Image (tube, rainbow, N blue to C red):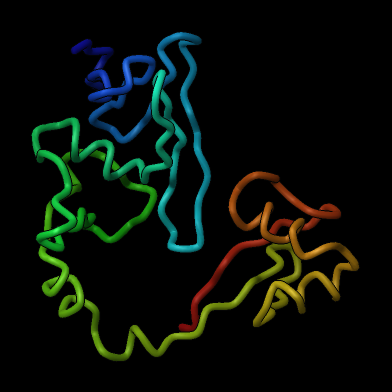
Length: 167
């Protein structure tokens, strides 16, 4: 375990080339670089880590929980790692806790599950229901839209895209 300023780093269990911090950052220790990862549709930031025999794509908040004394996620017991403040970008250890999946379902107010998700062009505020609609509007291929939404590309045709929910 190493400590830099107020950030504590520990090796990722089973993946010696990677370390995770209590602030929710992942580092490739071989190259001494922060691994940014990418955001999936579920709103969580994922990283891909590997050792000699295995490759694993995992949400950063789960890596933090598993390596900072919350222990491994027991999926058979329907445990999930939740953020106390609900912010998907806040993966710090102090913000994480385990909850039973049944509790998680009860935590969501009934009206929240009825909200509709849109894809928004940040610069214009235009909203679309599907990636197909956005691709047609911008005149680009559908996979290009997914690359921007998943964080693999910053923009498409000079336009930034993001998922937004009905308010």
